[in-house]
Image 1 (cartoon, rainbow, N blue to C red):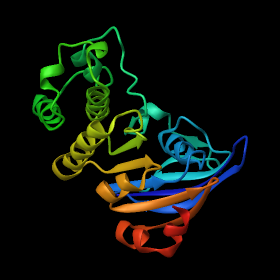
Image 2: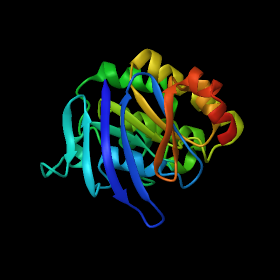
Image 3: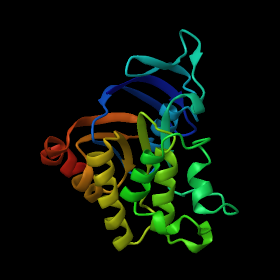
Length: 228
C-alpha cells in the first residue's frame, strides 16, 4: 500500500508543501517539533482539511485533486483517525462508542478480535468517565478499527498519557500491526516512540519535508542528530 501526496496548503504561519510517496506498511512515523505541520498532513490525508492545490492518491485511488476537481469526503475515504484526545461520547457506554462509526457489526469475529487485541472486553459496559487515559485511547483505536479502514492515522495518541500508559499503548500498537496487519501513519515529536514502533520515518520542519527513509537509516543519519 502506498500513499502519494503532492499538495500545497497556506497556513497562518507558513506554506505547507509536501511532495512524497509514503509506503503504508507497518508504522510510518511523521516526526517533527510542535508546529511543524504534522497534524496538517494527517488532516489533509483524512479530508478534514482541503489543500489549496495538489492531489492525494491512496493505492492509486484519487482522494483529492484540485486539478480534476475531486474531493472525496472524509467519511468515504476508508481511513480511520485516532486523535490526541480520545473524543469518546460521554453519554454512551464503551460498547456503543465502539460501534457508533461502524453502523452495525457485520463481522462478530472481527469485533471479538479487535476487543481482544486491545484488551477492552471488560470495559464494554462502562462510561468514558470511568476509564483511564490509556483505556480511553484503546477504545478510540477500537472504534477507528471497527470502521474497517484501509489505513489508520494516529495524531500524537500518547501525548496525554503518563509513562507506564505510554509503554502499554505502544505494545498494543505493535500488536495491531503484527496481528491485524493494519498500516498506521503515526504522528509524534518523540524520538523514543519512533525507535520503538516505526518502520519508516518522515521528518517535517515548518511545513516542509526534510528527510525520509527506513527508521534505522534515519536514526543513524547525522542530520537527525542535529535535529534532535
